[in-house]
Image (cartoon, rainbow, N blue to C red; front, side, top):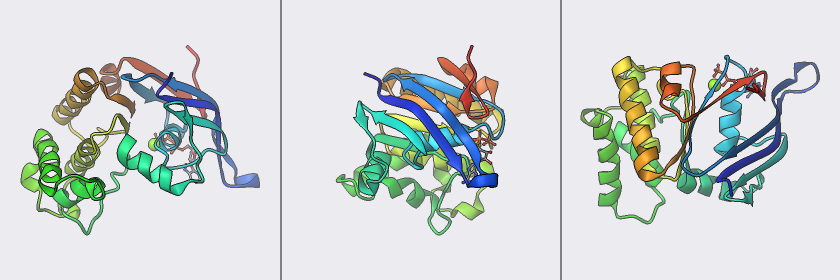
Length: 224
Ligand SMILES: Nc1ncnc2c1ncn2[C@@H]1O[C@H](COP(=O)(O)OP(=O)(O)OP(=O)(O)O)[C@@H](O)[C@H]1O
Ligand SMILES: [Mg+2]
């Protein structure tokens, strides 16, 4: 059984003359432990697809199964449970909270977990250290460079330690050295810890770390 499965997914934005068909008839099966790259031109629907996979947005039509269970996009509570416990998401625009420090941002997803505070703190610090930003822990997001913010967003997602990681352009703001670092971490999470990872990227170097590369155009898969 696939860990994630999309059946005939459509997503439309707007109405009438303003309607955008962002996804058309997308089928997608992901097996546990896959490391997948999704590539394609700007506006082709990559973020839309990833947002649906991450239960951040709902499809206009079609079915989505996680572990064989049909997702009901009307059940707000179960969607947030999935986003917290099952799937972590690295946002294209980072989605960090300005009023919180780096450490507070990274610990936020653990807030409602029944873990000891000390274990939450250790988990957050572990990933901040791995991403070389532990010394920024007390800073506010506004005080960071784009690349530093991106690493905070990645640390926050990894701290959730979920089975599935979805990453939307996770290295878009990073230099080559950090690109390599992030891809090594994601690859290790995939190979040693069996995490299922899907990465949207424009960067063929990043895609080169992945085991399956898919291409999208105009809201559809490009057949190879
Ligand atoms: N909230 C929205 N309202 C209306 N249209 C939207 C919305 N979000 C996305 N779109 C449109 O849907 C299409 C797909 O957008 P999407 O963000 O998925 O593209 P993308 O492949 O991620 O592009 P990029 O590489 O630039 O991030 C685009 O035409 C975009 O303008
Ligand atoms: Mg996008």
